[in-house]
Image (cartoon, rainbow, N blue to C red; front, side, top):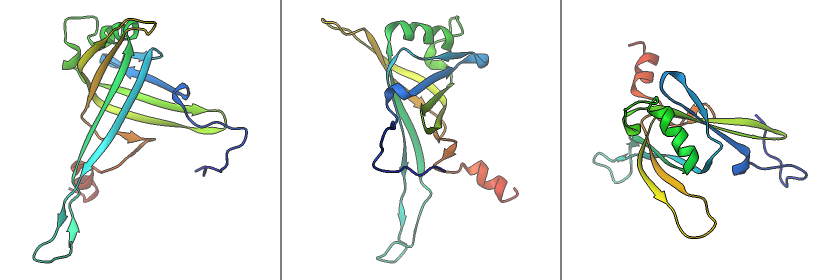
Length: 167
């Protein structure tokens, strides 16, 4: 693993221009998404401390992971994404699950790849106004699986634990 060296001289840090986003729709159809304005995602972990009859915590639960996110499409990219998500058919785009790949790459930096699986686009919101800005569609991402941050999940699923225990 490359450890960052600071201060960074004659090099680059990741920026929005450093990422490539790809949507994998039904039947493996892949759609690069160069026409997005923003993509944001997170993994919230809610844990609880276990006290028993002690004033000090005796442990903590593994908790529950709740991934979520948002994406902002320029209008023409939104139309392309809708066609892929609906497989050019009558299915509603929020009724299908799909995958988003976010690849971070910059000269001199090892590429990083985040994977959002089981994603549905919900609550599309069109934003139009007077001025020079392009029309955009803002959507929430309903994500069903823990996000893979450069191939690593923040938590193990129950199935993974049972498999590791030989059950």
